[in-house]
Image (cartoon, rainbow, N blue to C red; front, side, top):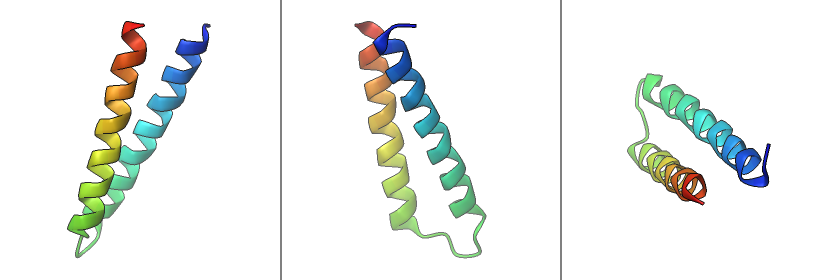
Length: 56
């Protein structure tokens, strides 16, 4: 496993954790739209980083 592979895996784990956090927030009676937007932006940033590392 290369350094990039381990970095990608760590980013994927973080992305999955954000998926779970997003799901929990959406299950609340009154989901916080600001928090949801923040989670989605963080997920997108992680996805972009994963894609960038995958190309290297």
